[in-house]
Length: 278
Image 1 (cartoon, one colour):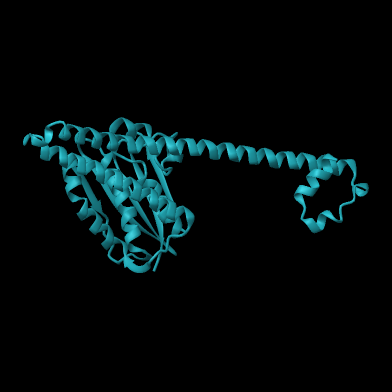
Image 2 (cartoon, rainbow, N blue to C red):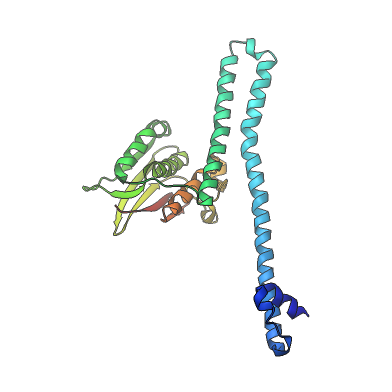
């Protein structure tokens, strides 16, 4: 009876009609039951992992939204309770409120983008462009931040253009997130970020290397998870949302390319990704 139930679950309706218990040996019954049990155990483990992921996701969302929401609440309450009439704080508190609201909007936009990327509904607008030219644009955009952090950013300049076939604006987002990440976790003094390009036959490899604080080996497998922040990242900064690298990974994988990271604590970190050569 046990075997008959398992077999009926695993087979199609047309196959069930052909079922004949008299032709099945005890060995077959034992194997089928064992296989069915193993399959169900895997399904249980998968559901447990999904439940754990759901709990972590909700917890992380709550944590990330809580800080800017509490900030907005505090600033608005102060203004309502009389601060609006105080010229020494009213404009400053409104400015801080605006910053917190912008952070909330950015978190929601990033989550929406990740959902699009994971669902496979994102349409890439692939064009032919020089990845070095785009990189220079990103570095110029981050120039003030690099100056404030006293980080020297260099780009190796091969003689020939490095043409790729990809979504230019999405790759701009990838470069911005990775380079900004290297600036955020750079050394307090003498920080350096180097961007290099390598011809890999069918692909172009882009690497962003810094001499920052580095990433612990235990953290490396999880750096591309949404909301995950390394232990050293938590010690040195409380501003990151933990979404940037997750978006980067999804964008590169949407291009059917790869991204990786290698790092040594106290030495630095290198992020590398490939793009299809044009």
